[in-house]
Image (cartoon, rainbow, N blue to C red; front, side):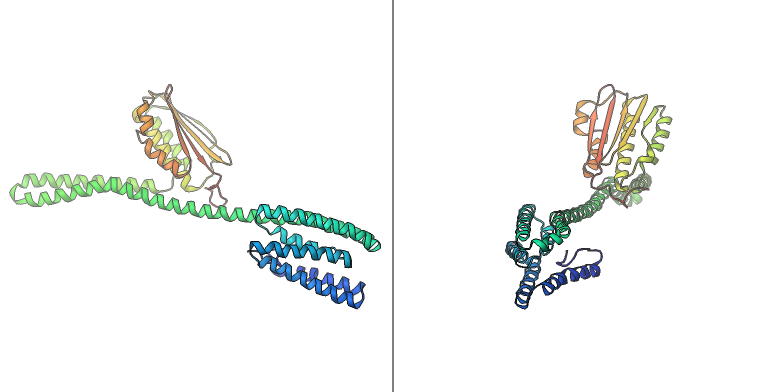
Length: 378
């Protein structure tokens, strides 16, 4: 949160020194140029102005505008009575820290209008003084015009960066949660049935060991086979959980397609692929699933993979010249398509399936939020 005296947030002590200089200037100006009674009244007005400026940052939304009104009036009084126009910079700084767009623009317009009018009036009252200070008055007016916008833009940027960081943390949390859910589903699907069967057959073998030893041996062999299958599935599950690069998966895809006597055509620069590791792993798994479907079901002779990455999106197309998918499989997510769709949807992506003279699976994954510096794949 920005404090009332902050000009350079990264250097708070320097900010305080700058404010001390700006705060001394109006007192020095009045003491140099006016008699005692005007000095006393001027000092009182300046102190009241700084009090209003301080409370404008401390007040809640409704009272902010009241303190702002006091600052506007005091700006005008100091300009017309003492020829001091530079307090308007303090007010401009306050306006720049307003977060509400409507309030900002209303107060910004009012401040510019009253500042210009008071300066014009000051030229009639303090002509000689204002003529000598014209360059500084012009700089002051430019500050009144530019400073609020600069601070307002900076505040908005910081707020957006904060929201983006919050969104990134939320995505990371959801990613972890979804990964846990996926692991739980995979463990249930791969191990649950096997372990249940092992338990049942173990009980059966224990009962048969005296009554029917031959049948007990058969059951024990089945238990051994089920345990081997379960171990194999666990190993595959652990392998899937490891981070996989698209570049590495493309190499494996090429070897698999070559073994299946399917020609492989690749279009895209693998060195340009830069995205979060989790997103890349998900896309790699989907790529592996799509190519496996081509080998098992498509009867294709050619597989083409095209990919392209922009600043906002990664797009990859896996296309074959096989028999294609019928409508029911495209709609119901057969051949592993449902699992692919669930993974991609978690990344806020989408899958399109086209089946005309073969099958084309188009995967799009947005990178606008998750494409963060420091999280990119190396």
